[in-house]
Length: 227
Length: 77
Image 1 (tube, chains in turn yellow, brown):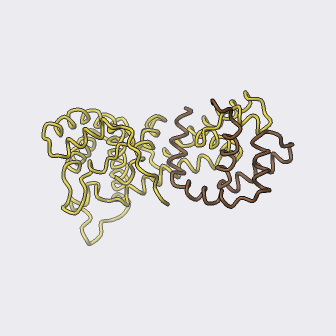
Image 2: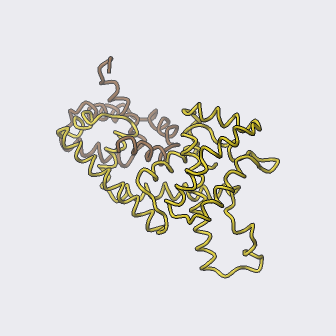
Image 3: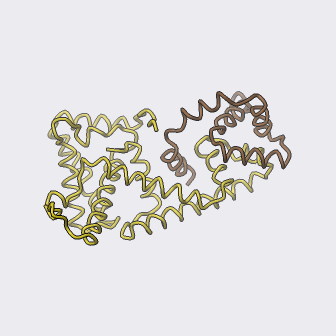
């Protein structure tokens, strides 16, 4: 499926990233000082222990500035389609989810002869586009499943209002309803979908502590997906 | 929460616009008339139910409906 064209809306963040990428040491230090504490705190709030959070953020900075010869640095993949902080938090949270899943996997499955206890195999693989695509898929599936639980008429109405920007008055006219009935139907559907999405994520990753706004931030940060 | 759902739909349906556009180009004039009638709010209950069912089953038709609705908006809207 073709991805939509990049439409940077956070020019200031994008310019800042460009300065960091032109090997501007001061800008790189500023990047770390601006976001390090915040990302560690958010990862802890979302279910990491302090050591995991510090390790993940250390890896994140390392990957932001360095890459194998034939690849972009992690920071080079930021396209300004969301705020830099949201994007960094999204990347870090995806890595946290990946790490926790790998921990679970290691408990459940005995090590193979190829040495899966190796240190380098234990840290999340930042270069693994496939694992991040899986997490993006998880977000999409949580949304899709929550929509599937609602009646299809509510979902159609939501889509017309939120994706295509039709007004509630226009919906009311087509449906033959009073505008207040449309408003109530939309609100009930939105509340139920938000509740279902969070419970679905909790079911899949019980350790993950996400509020609705956190989930949205992850979705928005995934606009620059496959970082 | 309103803008929240725009983010969800965009994440879910980010790449469908091109397909929708193609489907919209092949809509028969008869169907386009029915969609226009629905957009104007002049369908009876049975026609409305049929149209909602059709839109759920063929989401590629939604851009056609959206075009019809926008055409009905006052010029300064």
